[in-house]
Length: 231
Image 1 (cartoon, rainbow, N blue to C red):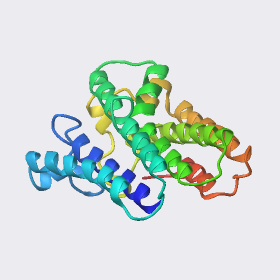
Image 2 (cartoon, one colour):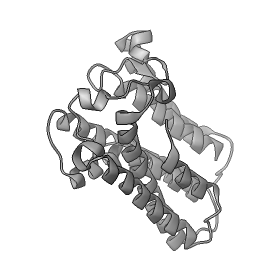
Image 3 (spheres, rainbow, N blue to C red):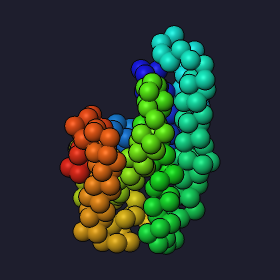
Image 4 (cartoon, helix red, strand yellow):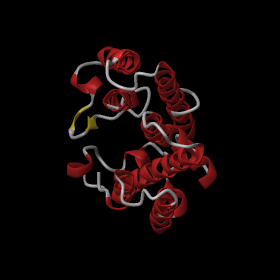
């Protein structure tokens, strides 16, 4: 389980390093500190991201801890790979770049968010689920839906924070999406509708947990945290 968690974080960090590059979002600040290409240079940032990515899969393949079943290891490697590639995060980033300066409807924006951000969050839930013996198909399906709803809620809340967040709290200047002409949930639907969507997604995620008696689990705490997160 520790290896799976570390692998997800390595993929997440790689994505942030590359996302900040001039060819992508061209951001100068990340987590309150200069972005990798600003602190060092673009070549170093690209290589750092590449190395973080392959280290994630090396860790899943070689870590001595559980799961010991090779079939499960291959399954969680596959889940993370799909979530990171064109059917997930990389595909969402491509849609994000294509949308710059343009307009999207809510359905298109949710598809972008589901791929770019939600896929990795959903994968983290499913990787943990596959490391837990004894879960049935209906439970795995509920966790998949939970991960999908929480992943989308996270990004909608991120859009909200880009409008009203505090740089000292979120670690990057607010308003960067607006400055790039990026379609966001508040820009398309208005702030109140964006907040309502986060609440709706939270409720849908919570129902999936409650169906299996997980309403007091750490996953439920994660869903509740999304409603009030400010970073």
